[in-house]
Length: 261
Image (cartoon, rainbow, N blue to C red; front, side, top):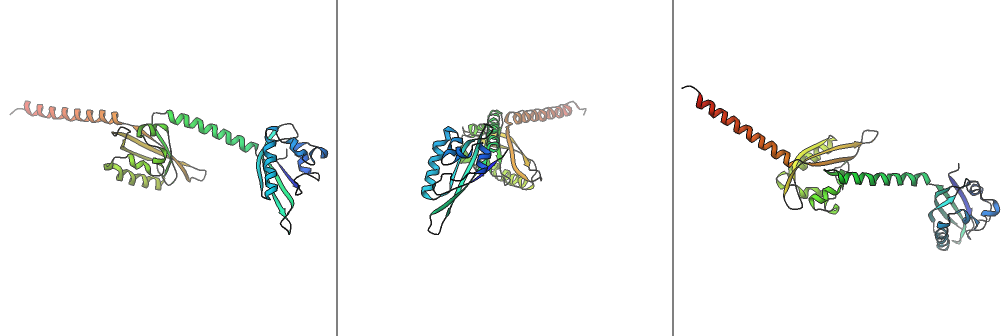
């Protein structure tokens, strides 16, 4: 199947000469597409806007650019990117219009699928227990999931770029930033544990991890990271460590008490 149409029209914008590629793509006959008959191949819902934009471009002698659905010879509707430029004569008047219709149906369908996939990703990311984020290769974070904003009480505007340091504990901020910059520059997996301030002003401890996403050549194109709340886990570990120390101290004291003189 043909994927593009090239056509010409006089200043009036009406097809006065047969347009071979137009007839081949649409299946219209010579008599059907001449004059403004070409509009009959444009989807009924797109005809009015197409003709309005086309009329304005001719009046202003500017590039005509739009998208509309066009009926192909097999009866299917194809999404077309349309563009036409005027050729001016010595007096600055339009001598001719040269235009193209390019079939972008597959492109628009791919974009739609990507959009749907993006929406599914957002839904998934917003419902995981971790705070999630994505960063540019430079380390500037450009996306956070909903849980990040719910926990920190911030907005995307607050957090753009390096704004995330605003919710870091002052005693850990410099250390975290230094390690973050170093590992992102090296392209190695990021991991650190530090406190983050919540919307209520209190701090909780998080294990932060990020993985570099690479293209086919191995170049880092994005980072995907998560922050997992480990406050309770650390508290339990500290309690166990304290209990262990206490037990060792008690055993040592008992040993000394029961040792023969």
